[in-house]
Length: 329
Image (cartoon, rainbow, N blue to C red):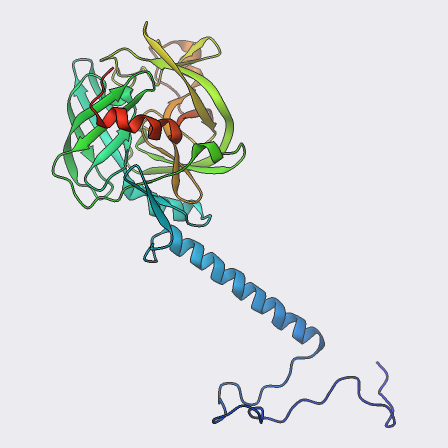
């Protein structure tokens, strides 16, 4: 660049004198004294840095909202006795941290054998939503929370037609209730997180997307025939007129399900499917395992291949009154 002649004004104004501007009252700020006005590319870099700081601050606020770092006075409302978060989108780690304390492992014992499943805490005194097939026919139910505490539980109500059940812990208080979302707002392709106890591995977190909506999934509605109570049965269900993972029995029920590619395995049933704001959007209820479907029910399921199904949470919320009233069947 050619030096300007002595007769021409300079292209850039000279830097201001060191120290505070004359118009500012009070003593000079030593942290800011000696600074020059940014010029050209330097000014652009400063603007980019400020924008990045603003974005970083927004991300920090989002994580704080999701993980309960604020007082929640303007970030929650109450629906059906459950605290519903209105926090911003988070990360898988943020969702896991926020929601894992609301997910439990359920062990049920009955005449048909033993079953292991999962459940979602919906009130601080221990109301838990799970699948009917996890606790159906159980004479004894033990629940373990994320902090390792164990409780006895009783069945409050069941709805085999929707494969839902409500159980209540004995002597529980101060539990963290999950935030129930709105499954009508769920869209194909959105990210979700699943939390449960597959194969008894308590508090397992997986993630994926919503693969499809309104899938017609058929499961057993036989009282006392828990779908995870027989070793090697896998997770029997029907779709498109075919049976998968074992025989569903003679009494069946069909519901509209959310399909997800988040990894689900036996033991995840009754656990949570969660959006990235930490809201429960579904109760995990079935999975497809091709090896057991091809080889028969005598062989154990090979595990998730990314075809899982969940009962929409709006179905659960609509059924809560009936379950709390002690419905059976």
